[in-house]
Length: 208
Image 1: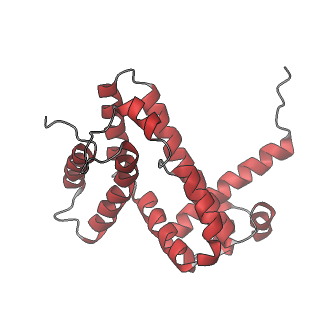
Image 2: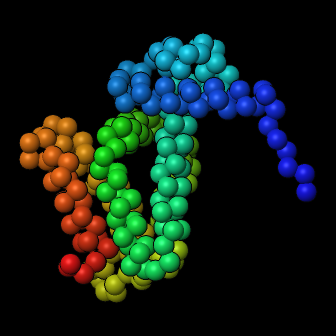
């Protein structure tokens, strides 16, 4: 089987896309979606504004591409961490560490906030947003998560593994954002402690 290698043009295109997304993250985090300007993204990436339009149709397009790229990276990171473990307890600890890492990621928390505000303010983009959400949510993966983390408890008050995992991300992002306004009580150490407690509660980990 012949493996096709990328030519110089393809490599250049990938490099440009990566630089644009990296610059876009900086600008969207700093200025928000509404305040971000494509010209500033291009300048920060060391490219022309035309380079953006060669890769993306609009500001909305590059913004959603950025969210999709970063969400995919987070998911790949989580799956890589889990793949290194061979037991349910090991998987649970690996997942805990993954979410605790997220408490350090202020940029992602701000991007998540901007994404949700965008979704609420741009109902005309609902279809694309639903497609994007379908690719990053865990709502159809209960069996897979149960195999990794052990089956969820039974009963009317039980929380499924999919709901637990999906809830952890937004909750941690909210804590990180809150710490930017109140960093005396909610410092990094406290946020990690709170995130640990929430993890234990949602995934019903026995008290250690």
